[in-house]
Image 1 (tube, rainbow, N blue to C red):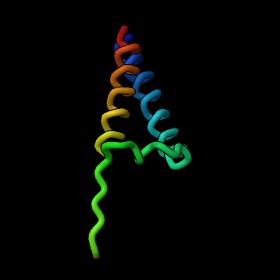
Image 2: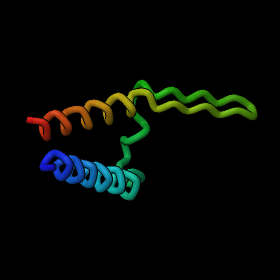
Image 3: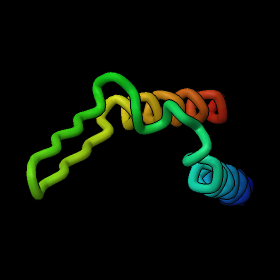
Amino acid sequence: MPEFGKTLIILGIVIIAVGALFTFGGKIPWLGHLPGDIYIQRDRFNFYFPIATCIVISILISVVLYLFRR
């Protein structure tokens, strides 16, 4: 059962990281406003897709998970 405990610890760290991102995400000025984020504004239509921000966050999460698996 040591694998279950390790999984719970990693899950807890991920939950804390996501909570911190939601709490402090609005205070990071570049988060969500990177070059490559798609923003289309028309008369009565706004479309925003933060693709570059999603890629950066995905890379960071991948690196952190890689470090925990080693």
